[in-house]
Image (cartoon, rainbow, N blue to C red; front, side, top):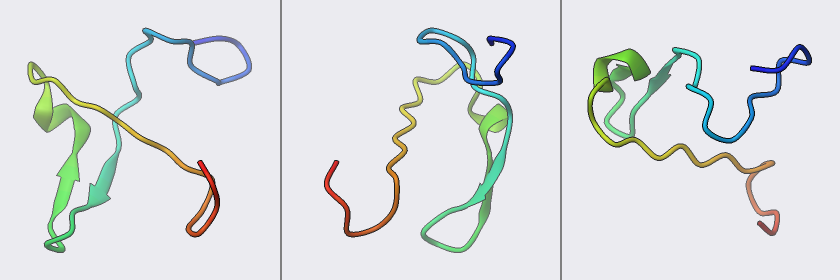
Length: 48
């Protein structure tokens, strides 16, 4: 990661926990060894 805290392409993502659509919690590190695609968008109802 760069000193600004913004990751570069190819950097490992920092571990985080987020709710799933089913309401469970999923931690990124629990998916280690699998292919994971993270998609971020600015906010709902915006182009992108």
